[in-house]
Image (cartoon, rainbow, N blue to C red; front, side):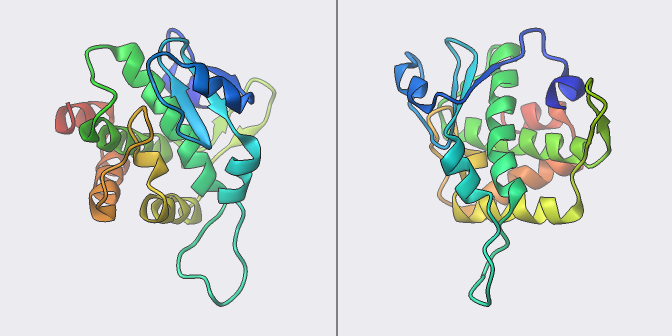
Length: 178
């Protein structure tokens, strides 16, 4: 669905070989999902990604967690690949993490409308999915991480960057977080 919405010239490759992230020459692993600019590859540790995407049941819940908590992390590494393709953007500092959170917000907003895939399926996010992404930004910050997985410590800053993306577009994110 993301390739349909953003149509990159060189879509990133997806691998479920999580160990391959350690071989990346220009980025450190950021499990459960890592992006390697040198190979334009997104490496997924599926068991760890499933863990952060599993809803927690019971009264002890403070924050919502679900499938889009995980999907937003994967989406953020995809957006990092688009930043790399664009060129001229630093990928390994706090501003890069906030830009990625912003662009993940853009992607989330676009995914709130049905996207038809080539196999005839449709994909779309719901309002609850946005809540799950925001909860992930507060609890783990992974969707607001730079290429090495480093995120600014302030949850409010991460959520604000995401909100700018949800309410804006790619150009607004690049302008706000150059």
